[in-house]
Amino acid sequence: MALAGPAFTVLGRPAEVSDHDAALRQVLGMLGEVPSGHVAVYGCGHDVSAHLGELSVTSLEAREVAGCVLDGGCRDVRFILETGFPVFSRFVTPEDSTWRWELVATQVQVNIGRVSIDPGDWVVGDDDGVVVVPQAIAESVLVEAERKAATESEIRRDR
Image 1 (cartoon, rainbow, N blue to C red):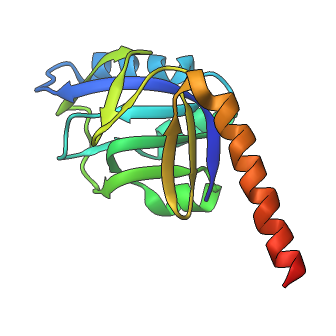
Image 2 (image 1 turned 90 degrees about the vertical axis):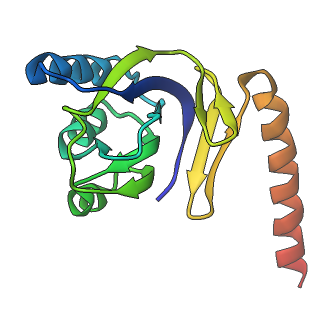
């Protein structure tokens, strides 16, 4: 599982939501805003329920979003694995977040652990984990990464 692309950030918080339909429509609207080729990055601020599942992934995948990184829960894991859509989450749970969590804003700075992610920062993830590269230095980091990869390829070739 791997992903790479600019961050589309999503900020949420715990809340007791009384209008299920309105909350669901708000999340569906947000999913429709994530541009193709971007990585949806959720700062959930919540460790109780799933913030991403089958319907969210179906929406994101249909619009060719690069993947999702969330500091929160995921459900419908078997379905997601079968689609091959890249998802990196903090935990897995069957509990729906619609009643317990609300979307606050998109395209604002979010924090995952000690890492701050701004809209447009580059997010790269694979089997080894996820890294975030600030947009301002992304090009120089790419040049250095390509240089290191070329050196490693040379070493493998020469052994």
